[in-house]
Image (cartoon, rainbow, N blue to C red; front, side, top):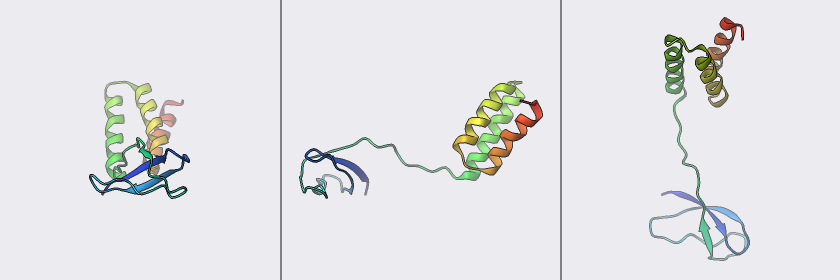
Amino acid sequence: MPIYDYECAKCGTIFEVIVKRGERPSPCPECGSLESKRLIAAPAFHIKEDRATARIEKRVKSYLKDGNISGAMRFADQAASMVKSDKVQRISDKLHHKTGI
């Protein structure tokens, strides 16, 4: 069953509800109002760190193979800021060390 975020139209409280298909959400936990609208939420997904790291490493190598060192560094830096992995950070650091930038 999906979890949705709702905003109460009466008091503005934002709350989460597990809703079965075709079922109305439960009343607002603050004021009890049944008037609420479903909010748009970002989908939640998780990529296993080892698979993400391997894909990042492959893409960096692809940039380097094509001679695009600045692209490799930019991609590695961005990946290091988004993926909390020591290996990804080491890839970025190694590129900076080798290029002197």
